[in-house]
Amino acid sequence: MTIKERVQNLRKLMKAKGIDAYIIPSADDHQSEYVAEHFKCRQWISGFTGSAGTVVVTLDEAGLWTDGRYFIQAEKQLRNSEIKLFKMGEPEVPTYMEFIKNSLHYGNTVGFDGKLFSHSDYLKMNKLFSRKGIKINTDYDLIDKLWVDRPSIPKGDVFIHDLKFAGKPRTEKLNEIRKEMKDKGADVYLLTQLDDIAWLYNLRGSDVPINPVFYSYTVIFEDAAHLFIDETKLTDSARDELKHDGITLHDYEDVGKFLKELKKERVVLLDGDKTSEWLYKSMPAGIEIIDEPNISTMIKAVRNEIEIKNYRNCQVRDGVAMVKFLYWLKKNVGKEKITEIDAEDKLEEYRRQGENFLELSFDTICAYMDHAAMMHYKAQRETQYEIKDSGFLLIDSGAHYLDGTTDITRTFVLGNISDEMRRDFTLVLKANIALSSVKFLYGATGSNLDVLARKPIWEYGLDYKCGTGHGVGYCLNVHELPQRFSPVPNFIKLEKGMIITNEPGIYLEGKYGIRTENDMLVIEDEKTEFGQFMRFEPITYCPIDLDGVDVNMLTQEEKGWLNSYHKKVYELLSPYLNTDEKEFLKKETREI
Image (tube, rainbow, N blue to C red; front, side, top):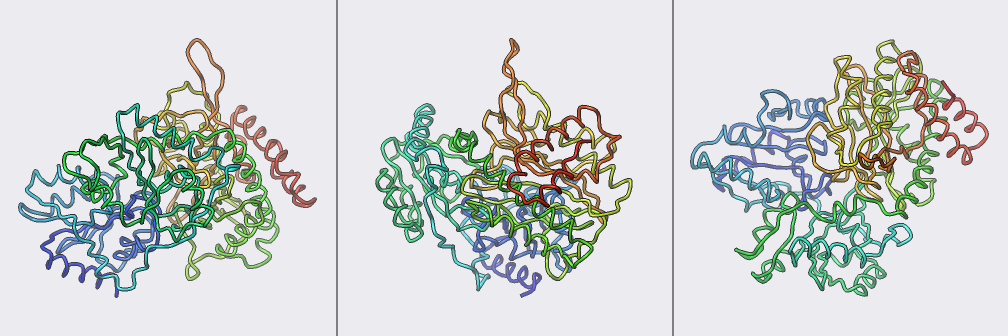
C-alpha cells in the first residue's frame, strides 16, 4: 500500500468505530524514545523514519508533528503524501492537541491506543477536549488491524550485566528503591521504563535495536519484587540469579491482571509521564496513587565509582577507534572512492575491535556537506554522497560497551573550506568550550547553563533548533533522563557523577552542518562560604579538527583550553596506536 492508501484505509476503520480523529505516536507501551519494529506504527502510516513525531488523521486531514531536528528530513519523506508537516515550536504552529480541538466539534470522538499514551498525556487531552465536548476512546489499536505483516514483539536474549561493570548488586539497588518508597509513603512501586528496569536488575537485552533493553514491567513491594517478562528471553544464569535474589517472574502480558488484583488500601508510586493510560486504568478504582518522577531514574543518573572508572576506560577505547578511523579517512579521501556508508562501516569496524564492545549506541550519522544540515540524517544507498577531498564531513556516532556508552560528534575538514565555513566551525568550538570550562554553583540546572553555549553563536544571528546536551546511559540508552542542557526549563540539579553531552552546532540547509560533541562528567570544584562549586570534565577523547579553526577568533583562555584538551587526548590514546597513527595524532593535537 502507498501512504495515501494506508491513510484512506485507516479512515474507513475510524468511521466504522465512530472515531473522528485518530492519533498515532512514536512510542511503545513503555513510552520509549527508540522502539522495536513492532511499535513503529507512526512510521508505517506516514513513511517518516525519524525517532520523534506524532501523526493525527481526521476524516478529511492528516498531519505529522515533529521537532527541529527533523524538519528537513520530514519535508522530504512526506512529499507526495497528503500528510502535512507541522513544525513543532515554530510561531503560530498549533500542537497536535490544539489542532484536534480546533478541527473537531461537540460530540466528536478522538481515538488512540491507550497503551501508547501516558496517563499524563491523557489528562492533558481530557482537560483540553472536554471543554469542547469532545470524547476520548482509548480502546482501539487500529493500525494493528491494517498492518498485515506487522513484526511480532521481539524475543531477544536477556543476559546478566556483571557486577564488575554494574558496580552495585541488584539487592542493594532494590533496598535504595524501597527506602525512597517508604520516605514517600508508598508501599507499591510500578516501574515501566525499560532502561530503569535493566539498570535495577543488572540485566541487559536486545529487544530494541541500539538500546540494550528488554520489554518488561516490574512491581516492587516492601518485601517482594515482581518482574513481568517473557521468560524464554532469560539465560539460565539470569533466571537463577533473579530467583536467588527473591524476584518473582511473571509473564509479560500478565501485568494488567496483576495490577487489577492490588488491594485498595495499597499506596502506589508511579510516574504518570511513563505509565500508560491502559496500565493506570488497570488498577482498582479508588486506589491511592502518588504520581511523581521515577525514583530509579534519579538514582541511576548518578554514577557510582566503579561505573565512572569503567566509563573512563571505555572512552579511551572509543577514542582509539575514532583516531584510527580519522587516520584512515584523511589518508584515503580523494585517492579512492569513499561513500558515506563506506565511512560509517569503517568506523564501526574499528569500534568492534575494542574490548567489551556490544553494539552501536545509535544509528551513525555520517553526513557530507549539505546532508549534515539534517541533524539526524541517515545515509541511504540510493541517495548517499561520495566523500570528496574538500568541505566538511560530520560524523555523530557512539557505541555500547559492557563498561559504558559513548556519544561523540566530530566535523572533519577534508580540504578547502570557505571563510564562512571556517567562521562557523570556530563558533561551534567556542560554544563547546564555553560550556566545557564553566565553573558553577551547585544547584544549577542544565537550562540555567544552556545559554553559555548559544551566546557565541547568537552573536552572529545564528541558532540551533535543539537542546545542547542530554544524559548518557551506562551500557544503556544513549539519551537518558533526567539531566539535559536545553532552553526548555527543567529543575534537575546537576549532581556529581552525572554524565551529560555538550553538542552545540550550526546547520544551514542546502550548505553544511557542523557539530562538536563531547561527553562530560559532573565533578566538584572548590567549596567556599558561598557554597559548593562544580565543573565539567570532558571524558571524550578525540582531536577537534584544527584545520577548521580560525585561531584569531579564539581568546587566550579558549586556546589554553583547547591545547590542554588535546594534550590529554594525545597522552591517553597514543600508547594504543602504531607509529604512523601516533605521528598523525601528534599533528592533530598540535599546540596552537
